[in-house]
Image (cartoon, rainbow, N blue to C red):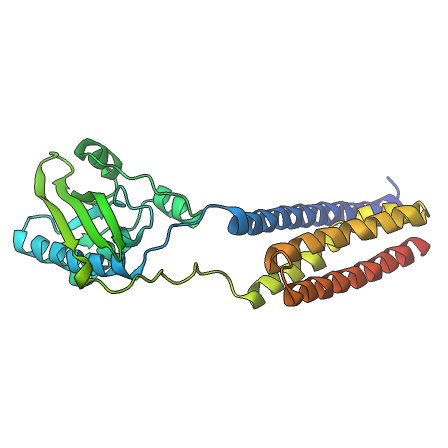
Length: 297
């Protein structure tokens, strides 16, 4: 083997490694882009948790402290328990408040929420929860606590005409399936005791600034990760093909902007969409110019 071959081999190996690394970066970037698109679409068009008005919140604040008092007075041998999301609680409000009150009171040391519950809640899906002793013990077994705390919400409503909360709660030993504590709470409020119904605050969404930054990141990175495709297009020397690619990338940016701003129902959303589309168009024109210069070298 000649000396020249010995010198060329390391350079070729380096180029191959660099090419593989760049391909991996592009692959991760495309996956991230698609994941962000899916995230925006799910957040805008996916399921929504039902709200809890002020009347129902007040019902919860009357009943749940009594649950804490009863658990403390029961004096069971269980010091730690798995708390399972309450069945029949699509709003998550009662489950969240009960977990918070039990943890703050120190009556029981509750284990973290199960993985399936965290996944379902992050996707705004209804949490699947056991309604029977056998199902609750089966779900809680192996999670590190000797007892399981679960329950069923039979009724939870509140309007200016009246409100009622019916909750069945059970604390059971996981190993023996013996019931350590069980009670049904049924509290009804008469219309005279209720205040005018007000809906809960709007669903928390990411701030407009953070969503715009996410949009800018996707718009900036998409042409960078597909620069090979852009160079292959401009290499053809077809103005029609260049215009088509330019319009395609701008349309993608405009679709993302529409997810962020929403459908233009007034002057302000329409102006925002127009400004974002113009910025994306100008950026893509610059990227196409860069691709042309690279091909001219």
